[in-house]
Length: 394
Image (tube, rainbow, N blue to C red; front, side, top):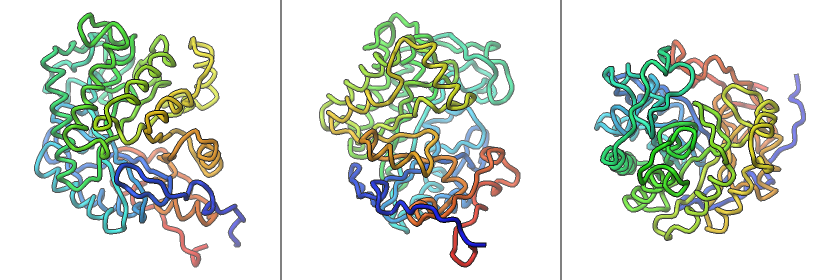
């Protein structure tokens, strides 16, 4: 059977070179991925050969990869199988990953996080999680325990400053492991974003109240990490239109615009190389139409878009990465409109290890299987067993 005719994208903006920090990228497709760490002991998961194989399969000359979220410390995690970057064995494991990517001429950034109140007591030696306040998430944690059964404990100033140091040490260890940079996770309802949303953060100290105070913790982390490893090696992920994990800020457009203004006017040595934002249409539970309709109905803002944030950041010379429901059809228009500098693929890059080549040459994409994104047995399933296209196979 002949292969359907699909327009090749190799001559589009998707394959125009661009410089990100010190990385000379040859295309504007960046993948995100899923956790398959090998458990070494409770709370310590190590990148193994399977992860090196996965990232190596998706590496391309001049291509950027952003890893799965990675624990900055022993009690930062909220899910099984999430690798860390706080032990010597984890550093060694990640070195096999970065070596596999660099062997193909690719670049790779490590996404680093702390999950805050998204972590169940079973991951914390039975203790309640820490957050900006004592407001629990709705629903249950990943282990099935109701979140309201153990409300989070508000972090003290000393604890906040200790976590800033943990982010810094994680970034340093990432560079030691061979990464080209790090992406600070300040999105999707995890710890740093728990300080940004005013429905969660009801503090009355220097980290709460006004949007200026609520931005302090994420900005402190960013500035400290840039000071430690260089701002050209640092990005930050934000999700202003996020609902996940009970995030319901009262004025997303105004509040994240303020944060972006702060980022864009930081001293050059503390200004991130890029900001990675999640499209408003993306949601973990709602489909695209339902999410947009919900935002339009429930938000004060008339503009439900990433464009206002992009425009602010562009004034500061900060590259803009966009993620959330991108495919062959909508990725190029996003770039050609100037609304983003790079687009990130998650699901399609999982099922198509050679996604850039398929997009460039007009080859049909392999459909992904959502049921194998997480926690599969065996772990290879839905991870490294998707085929790579060959003309003979077609």
